[in-house]
Image (cartoon, rainbow, N blue to C red; front, side, top):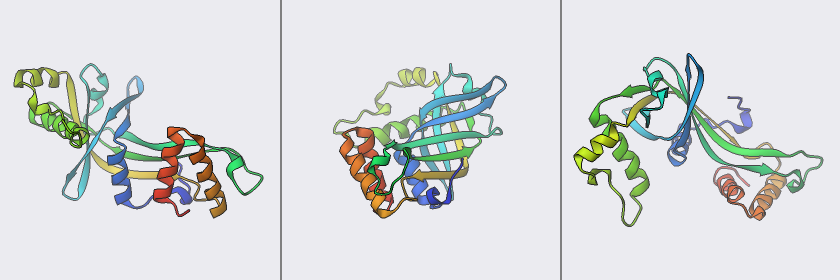
Length: 207
């Protein structure tokens, strides 16, 4: 990924927090038929000093056959993004741009047919998104035969993190006045994308 120094995110803790927060990823692999991509929720599992990405795909999705633990894959985690109008800047002339935050994770995914691994992958994923609900749904509440039938229709995998890089393009290369105008513009757009990006910028950039 092309990452100018202004937009580089070298802090591993920020990157780990990002992929946990924006856990719906695009997983890209290469096959004999060409590139293949799936859009799936992914969780992070710590193993000592290393992290692994845990996910699953439908068994009918042949991408899992590329998860041999040897071939490299790319998982892309997308954060907030929105169009930025040059009319928001104090500096002129200026041109339109698109600001965004993204993290790329590279590794070698390995598929697993182990029932306990698959169950843990599903239980952890559900718990992540259900735990804060007043009446959370639990995978453990399913009858064992029902769970086994549903689990047999997917293939779980683990992808040890080999390399991770982040790009937060949030106007860091602009003046403070330009950044202030950009934020005012985003917050005045009245769209959820612009609002989320503005909030993210305030979290990560001095304005």
